[in-house]
Amino acid sequence: MRKIMLAFGTRPEAVKMCPLALELKARGECETVICVTGQHREMLDSVLNVFGVTPDIDLNVMTERQTLFDITANVLSGIRGVLTRNAPDILLVHGDTTTTLAAALAAYYLQIPVGHVEAGLRTYDVSSPHPEEFNRQAIDSVSRYMFAPTGVARDNLIREGKKSENIFVTGNTEIDALRYTIAPEYSHPLLDWAADSRLIVMTAHRRENLGDPMKRIFRAIRRAADERPDVKLVYPVHLNPAVRAVAAEILGGHPRIKLTDPLDVYNFHNFIARAYLVLTDSGGIQESAPALNKPVVVLRDVTERPEGVAAGTLLIGGTSEQDVYDAVSRLLDDEAMYRKMSAAENPYGDGYAAKRIADVILSV
Ligand code: UD1
Ligand code: UDP
Image (cartoon, rainbow, N blue to C red; front, top):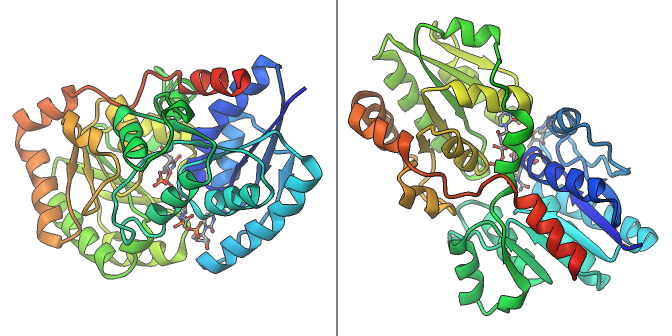
């Protein structure tokens, strides 16, 4: 029986790899081994709990205020032994994190074929997002199989000279995850708190936004919310201490803004489904929010998800205080624009990407 190993380590990778792990296990046509690096700890475990996925191996690498050097070195050396001992026929990795880069590199060194889920996303600016844009390009250059979520991602890979027979357009497994999480009957005390208001759900955590850009973004959002008494905002703050300090400083203490710990993905997806508007610098939320018909202001200068901008569901808000303020204000004040963005079609798939990926892996 063939052995397929999945390696992942952060919250977004887990959200997008658990549907694939469950699909492969349900088929029973291969041995499925799950190795987590623990680049995230609480935020990873929370996703694993929601999906009921138990890892076979856990490298447990996370440390407080870890650097890219720490994560890269610890994952690379830790996964070497795992790959050698388990000798999988293929290693599946996801997206663009440091876990993904180091795991793919280790497999490449050991000449184990790599399958890259969510291949082909690009900004072609290695400083934004940093270091994810470099990671994605490097990972695709060592991947045997590339699972592109959209035609745009596929075209990027083709332009870079990748062979078309190794590229498969599958949709994004983020949309698959919604099939596990969205509950029609859902309630939460924070939603009751916001019941009489327009609810904004926001997240922000990108490394290149840490420091001044994040301060500017938060000041703009506080101002936009402050000026509109019918708006309430919930921000589940990432566990990075560098993010938490700025969030508390600028957004804390406002009667209509709630800062919470990260929500688990079940709760978070259901919050998005009931929000009026989403503000985020996250990658995955740029996919799930459009699938739930929620307009998104992207708190970044560029996105590797141009399909969402073209479809009219994502608005690039930038990172200057005035640009973010203007973008948020437009969506809160211009009802026609809001309605148009809510009605735009989600370009990230139908929720069956994991099945397509499994079909390919089990047939090659
Ligand atoms: C990482 C990814 C990023 C992804 C993000 C998702 C890299 C380089 N970055 O960034 O692409 O968008 O995850 O959230 O791979 N922490 C905890 N508990 C947790 C998770 C994090 O305490 O469960 C704290 C730790 O102090 C850690 C810090 O957050 O040092 C930053 O985590 P890290 O994985 O280095 O970076 P992210 O910003 O989360
Ligand atoms: N998410 C979550 N709880 C939160 C914030 C986000 O479960 O409090 C989910 C979100 O729905 C998406 C994934 O985490 O599925 C995205 O992770 P994140 O924003 O940390 O990373 P990125 O996508 O930017 O790499």
